[in-house]
Image (cartoon, rainbow, N blue to C red; front, side):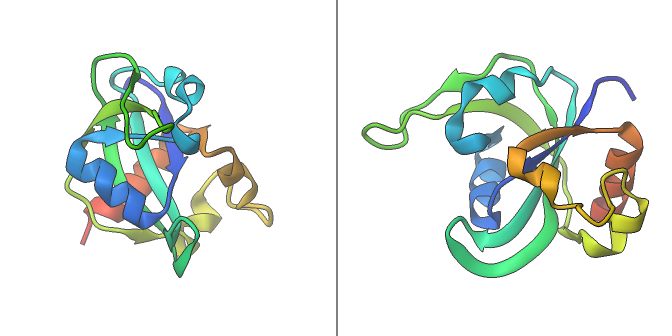
Length: 138
């Protein structure tokens, strides 16, 4: 598979909005992280919780897709909030809890949660293959 593989982080309710709209948004709408992505890159969203400021714990991968052609673009969501987005072709997938996958992921050691603080981080294709399998399998 060509391209790179990424994990983005957002609450499950925000991920659902992006999947419904065919886009992704990371790091509170910053453009710079999205510029690291290229068309054809694969992305999986990890959702720690149901809502940004609370809600039930989710701790699962909640969306899987491929970055579409085009650069990041800005939208107006509210006065004073104009986040950047990237278009994504979302794959039919179901949530996959992270805990059963941790021992097989490159970042799955005792400090597995640390990379998620960046909001977007690159992973090896083998990690993405494992995540994709868990999200599209039975």
